[in-house]
Image (cartoon, rainbow, N blue to C red; front, side):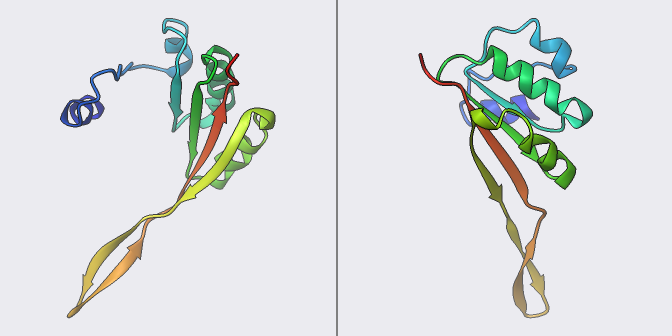
Length: 117
């Protein structure tokens, strides 16, 4: 699905790597940007290792939908965190003759950066 969406939107420089993040990191070049989501118990290790390899001026965004993940991310390298953003989405839903906006769960984004040299 990621590859299909990337082609559809012209993101031809996107390289999708399938497998466990910690194992895959060792075989990848140093990244300019990283998106971490669904890391579970390995979230800290994934973020730490990715930040260590991040190119100067690069960005890492880690997502959290669970409060426990958000709490874990708050403790990871706060000096490298640029901001925390909570995104909420609502979709329309027909109710009788009217339309209501039905909320989805919010997503919390922790944005980290590596200073340019």
